[in-house]
Length: 146
Image 1 (cartoon, rainbow, N blue to C red):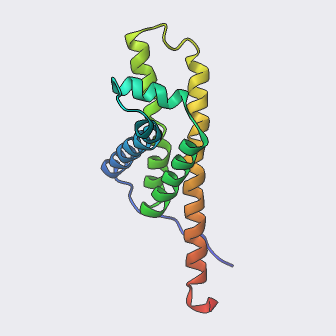
Image 2 (tube, one colour):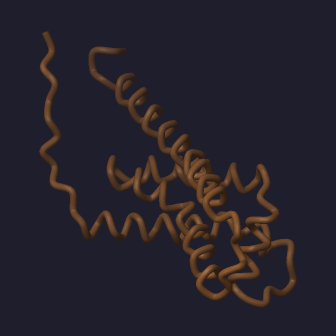
Image 3 (cartoon, rainbow, N blue to C red):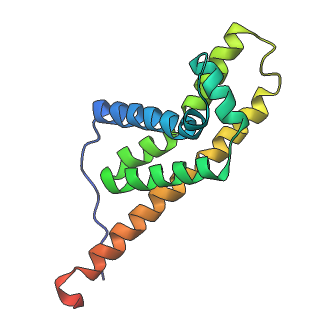
């Protein structure tokens, strides 16, 4: 009979914060990168983000998936999860700031935020794939499995 082991590793709040910050920055870059490459001049970050959201495509979803996969390989358990979820965090932040500037700009914001929540599942799939790959590689590299 195999007993389950309890993970007693302490989670650092500072490292968790930096993982979320890295996820936010990387997500902003991944979401806006195709738009930056196709446009000559952007008036502001808000115009850039607005254009990126309106032109959301499969390419951006693949970039978010790849970003989640990279976080799953680069960071350990709680940190990779937070970084992946926060990749989509810049979208509601920009929406809230726009709502504060103009209260009529996002009339259907609850639905918009539900879409952002669904979009957060894409990088989570990437993290899950990286964790699965790590687990499979660990199983094949055990001394008794050759």
